[in-house]
Length: 278
Ligand SMILES: [Zn+2]
Image (cartoon, rainbow, N blue to C red; front, side):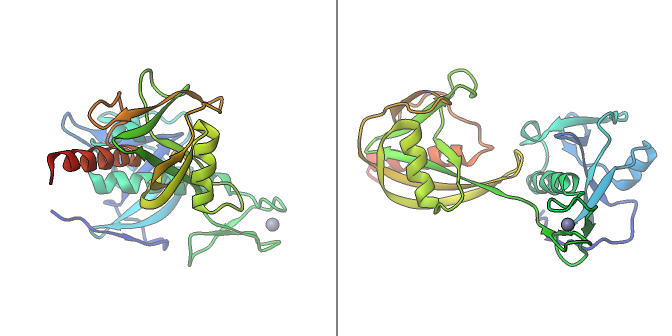
């Protein structure tokens, strides 16, 4: 069945069947059966006595209103429900619900940290016609913040540049990534990050694709690039190891949740096809 999500910032009269994407900290409340998890309805939340601290309309999934909500830090999961982090919900929530959950987390967090004007401290008001908060005193408008980050697969013929960071799980390697800084183009950020992390120069930077990354508020913008010159010199405290890996001899790599894996899969597929002559 094809599901369709229609984003909408307008609030609707409450209905029992409204779907709640309700967070306690970074964890989403879900109804769990052995087979899958799903967000609870407004009716089930009310029955469990869980009133949200704040909530925001998100839109409608197949006509059913979806709402992001923040629960109290000490909220307990009612029977048949559990709190799970977004990473743990990948592959357990339906794809469309997972995408909405990521958006819901970003909207919930924006709602939480923009209760007061960042310029004058007055309590803000939520605008009804767009996703924004406005200060009734100085008129400052605050939109949900996105922190763009570039992520890039650097190729050298049959090899891919992969790095292992101190914060990564033991033995797992991935492609280079980093946040875009003020005043940079995306290409500038790609060149700077690669230079900072491994000290090589790249050429032929090409857009690959993008992915919302709600941990907590990023947008990952993927690129491919080719090695131009220079040997690997680990330059940043966050990188522990880096190297060139052949397409058919890769180390442990990230799960399917991330665009980093999509980039690595693109590389291995393209080299496999080249070697099979197709
Ligand atoms: Zn203000």
